[in-house]
Image (cartoon, rainbow, N blue to C red):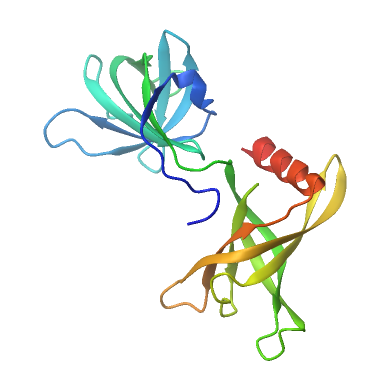
Length: 225
């Protein structure tokens, strides 16, 4: 578990507290026998009135929700897992396909990450102590696939270090219209491999970041989210 991953009890929040962004992935399921989960998208909400959800994927021509029925909605904001029950007020086909749900009074939410995490695809360099001579450092080209203020997940073709191994991650980002190189110290937290492929997924936690590094990471994660 990374430093930004926590365990918390479910609490009742307002939908507004979650700060949902258009395009967040949802699952909707009608509360009728035999109903299955439907991949959906959050489109918009009018506080106290309604929530707009739309279909997604190759079967995105319909929401599979019917006016008057009750459905369960689940989602993940990047920090909170949440769910709520709602009633379908109306369904629409024009100007696009979506369902209007009754705005929930409260949402069941569980904080699972202290900081926002975003998906990325950025080339980076991971620097590790050399296996034969710890005084030396070796560089490994990796791909940064997600990022938060507290840590990151990278994909690597090289065998991962042991858990707890100190390392640094170096990559370039654009901050205030200028190219900035970040060189972030951290430690290895966990790893897994992709079966059938020579790829490793490495989770790391950042340690002792400078104030400037934290500012840039906060800007990146919240602006891209």
